[in-house]
Length: 185
Image (cartoon, rainbow, N blue to C red; front, side, top):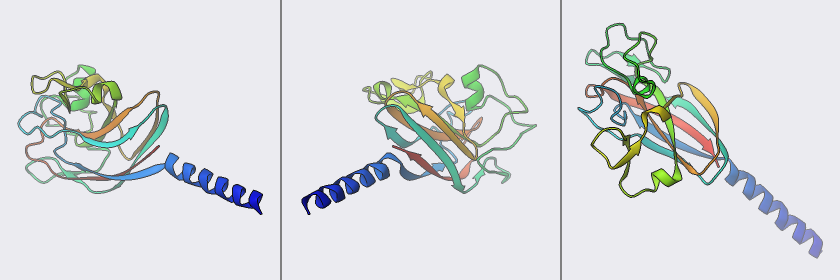
């Protein structure tokens, strides 16, 4: 009887560990959450949104659930993959990260992300905004930003936090946002 109890307790422990290893979090990413990146992102400076923190090597999946971003004063909308904009000016978040100016292939209002190592995120004065501007002591480096769109799965090698935001040239006229699910340990 004792061995059955031990086996049952071990089974419960393994099941609990499996559930903890793949926790899911629902996150809302505001249409203004540009992290102050890009050439027009400073008129409204909304930090990127923390979604999940991991303690070490891990696989993270971000999946779009619902919502749209109204990304201009005319009422044009975009889903998580963003939209092409032939008349947009300036530099988007992702373009700043790559050191280029606005390209027609850029996806305006797309869902983007950045994984920030724990040492930086825990640093005194850290804020999830553009670390190359004078608005923050310690921030996010533009070159770390990446496109997520509808869904993205990626591996991280160290402890840190995933932040989510919007790829735009300026967010002063934005509204709406994306509901996403983030899965990770």
